[in-house]
Amino acid sequence: MIRLAWPDLGEEELAAIAEVLETGQLTMGPKVAEFEHGLAAACDVADAVVVSSGTAALHLAVLALGIGPGDEVIVPAYTFPATANVVALAGAKPVLVDVDPETMNVLPQAVTDAITERTRAVLVVHLFGRPARWEELEAAVPDGMALLEDAAGALGAQRGKRACGGLGRLGCLSFHPRKIVTTGEGGAVTTGDEGVAAAVRTMRHHGWSSDDMPTPGLNYRLSDVLCALGITQLRRLEALLEQRERLAAAYSERLPDGIRLPGADDGDRHGWQAYVVQLDRRNEALNALRGAGIEAQIGTYALHRLGAYAEQGPFPGADEVYERALALPFHNRLTRHDVDRIAEVLTSHVSE
Ligand SMILES: *Cc1c(COP(=O)(O)O)cnc(C)c1O
Image 1 (cartoon, protein in one colour):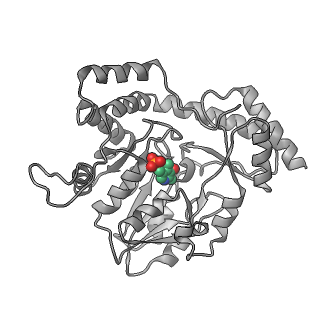
Image 2 (image 1 turned 90 degrees about the vertical axis):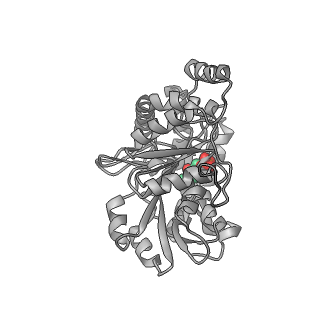
Image 3 (image 1 turned 90 degrees about the horizontal axis):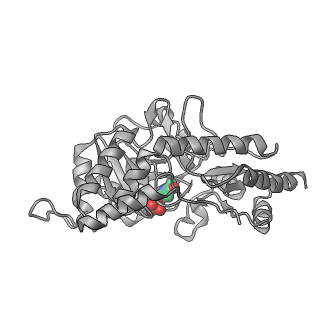
């Protein structure tokens, strides 16, 4: 069996966890601040606030901006559902817009067309780690409108020389095991806006602000045990990225014509959260891979095809990608031989 994902964990992580266990301080301790400093530096922003998941980061980001009933937030029609769910749960309306099948990221023109007087923000996703065309998006919205980043899969990615997670008013990261840096579950809000950082910090901890509770909050904290895991991985981020770049190159050498390969714009650095190709008869390819003992998966979801968002659409770009995208095994235990086996199955699929 060739697995889809496999977190890169070892002795260093074990030692880091053991060290926290020995201190007896499992939460709200020094590892939280240390992980936050590392993340802020990686995204080139003043502040990072760690939370219990990427979804928690997105949820607190929306709440920290005061987005609620009567407001609209523009989100891609093709993304992990949490991007839209947090907007809906805050009482606002997630307004879906179509994506470019080539990049799988949101179409700037579709963003412009969706703006109304209720639009409070655009939640841009760097899908699977591919940096969105940021300047085009900035030009697509009125001056001063908040562009937010769902950078859940984009830690380490760069748009030109600028780090993803540091492009917008705020960014949201995830440390789920299918992301490049993992804590099992975890996430962070990155921002240069002091007010946003303070609001997220307050709301992840029940709404406490020194000895008062001015507004109700949640418990979205991340434990010191998990921060210690994250710190060790974040130190290796460059090496982890380079390994994935080599693996992506191996795939692109071996995969046959007739498959659309992932990539980033010239001058950008892909974050390689996942390796997602597009091809005809995707479901058949998925079955052929599974039949050969290779774990593969669809890319992500077309939200208008889920019950919660079924009243919006049509989105032909999102439909196309939803039907054609295929995530291939992508982790550091994958051997050249594994890549050969995967390429063989796909070569016979496209020649059928
Ligand atoms: C993984 C992911 C999320 C959710 O992160 P969790 O940590 O699993 O809650 C949200 N958006 C995108 C684009 C993701 O890839």
